[in-house]
Amino acid sequence: MTSDPTDAIATRIKIERERRNWSLSELAERSGVSKAMISKIERGEASPTATVLGRLSGAFGLQLSTLLALAEQAGLRISRADAQPVWKDPETGYTRRVLSPLNGSVLELVEVNLPARTRVSYPPSAFTFQHQQIWVTSGTLVFEEGEATHTLNTGDCLQLGPPVDCTFVNPTDDPCVYVLGLVKR
Image 1: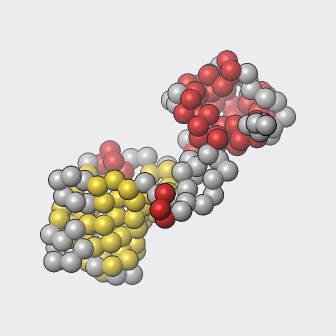
Image 2: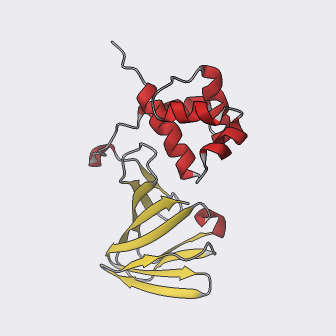
Image 3: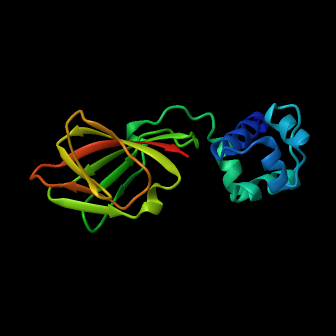
């Protein structure tokens, strides 16, 4: 027996719209779906057709399959440590573990392990669509944020400013572990 995904789809459409800070009117204009229909879908009063879903996913810049996959994952509220995705940079040994459940939430927690004597740089575009905070859980992190340099020790937390060139530096002989709190703009 399969479950009806209507409620999950309704929730996902509302999340995607709110994530972009779009009003119902703006989504209606971008998608060609009436404001009344979008409102009914989000409240679970109407089940969207494939055509309507196609228009909404297109407005969000998502493939229909991606929108549906995100809707299917909406109920996932726990992320088990042994199932959290980990990516390792082959050049530096930097590891990035996604701690948050993979349900498309606006908040994402990521744990980073920055090896000794390592630098990782990012352009401003890496920070354009999200607000970030860095919380150091062990070691020392020097964070170069444009012209500013912040030295963070265990327990320190920094809220990032506007998007600029940034470099994460571990100047010590010990690993540095920090958690990034990311909220989509």
